[in-house]
Image 1: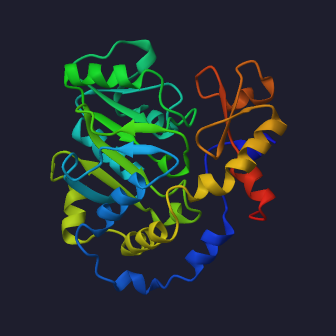
Image 2: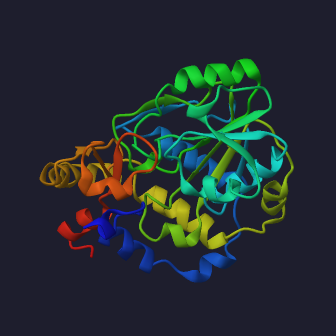
Image 3: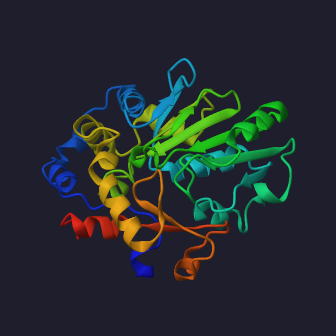
Length: 293
C-alpha cells in the first residue's frame, strides 16, 4: 500500500491520454504567438468555478515566461536571490531541500522569524496538505513589511477545489505553475509558466525572447487547457477521492489527488514530511477505479 501512495503524480486519465496521443509532433514547427500561452493560462486558472483565484492579471504581473515546469522557475529564483537566506515551510516540495543541501542558506519557516535578507518560497495549494498554507496571510504581510521576495508555487492549482486566494498581494514577486500534476503526460512535456511583476532579463527571459523553449509543450499546453478546464480533474475524481479516503480512514484534501492521515496513524508514518499529518497520494488508487492503470 505505501508504495502506491508515495510522492505526487497526475491521475492516469484515459480521456487525456487519448487526446495527447492524437497530437501531431508537427507542433515542433508551429511558430508560437507572443503572449498566447500566458494569456491562455491566466484565463484557464481564473475561470475555475470550484475555486476563486484572482490577481493574476497583466496589470499585476505584466511579465510572463514559458518555463519547463515549476522547477525551472525555482532554479532562477534561487539564482536571482542567491545571497539571501531561503525560507520554506516544513513539508514543502523536496526539491528545495535537496537544492539547498549544499548550495543555499536556508531555514524552516517554523524555526526562526522572518528577517530582512530572506527569500520565501511557499506552495499554494500547500504541498503537504493540498490546502491553503497555515498563516499565509500574516506571513505575506510580514514579507511585505520586510521587503522579502516571495515565490508562490501553484503547481497543484489545477487539481484543487474549494480554495480562494488573491495573488495580487504586494509581497508576491513571482507565481510559477505547471500542468504536470493536472494532466497525465504533461510532466514529460515540461509545460509551465512564470508570472512576474518585473522583467528581470534572466536566462528564462532570454530563452523566451529567442524562442529556445519546448514548442511542443507550448502548443500542447494551450490545446489541453482549451480542451479541459481547470476544474476537469476535481469534478471528475472528487467523489472517488472521498470514497477512497473513507475506506482508508483518512481525510480528503482540497487537492483531489491527496488524502491526509492523522499524526497518530502509524500505517502511514513513513510518509510524514515533517508536519503533524501524513500525506498520501491517491492518484494510483483513483485511476485503478476508473480503468486508468
